[in-house]
Image (cartoon, rainbow, N blue to C red; front, side):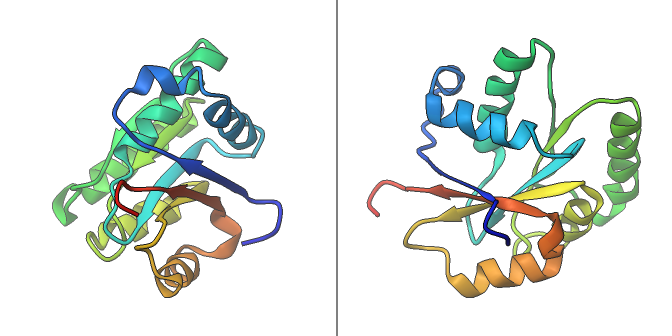
Amino acid sequence: MNSGQTQALAKVDGQLGKFAEDPLWQRLWLNLESQSWRSLAVMPVGDASSIDLVHALAAVAWQQRGTPVIVADLRSIGLPALASARGELRRRVQNGERVLIGMNSLDTNPMSATIARDADKALLCVILGRTMRSQVRNAVRELGAQRCLGSILIRMQGY
């Protein structure tokens, strides 16, 4: 990842409406919005979930843009549905929509790598104190450094 990439410390607590008012999340969204992408894979590294982060970003985007950003929950996508999901994502992007893709980690779901490589860009979710550097390096290598915009550092209770 290059030095111009995004990093933010996020506390995910399920109160999505508050994210739209939080200057940290607003700054993160504005930074992401300024990048060239139509589809953004939000990929956890390790055993985190990305769906709360995707919904938080969508809440901020809605406030800033006044138009919805599509949320694609592909955490449990299986091989039989992969081609259909890829086609739907391509169709949305070709129609000019912005899509935030929530997924499981590469370790949890092998389809995540294919979906993330199809996306224009990726944002990694890293848990402070639990995610190993080797896992981050492997994710960047798997997706390609040019695709990775940066990471969100998640502080879990107890860490």
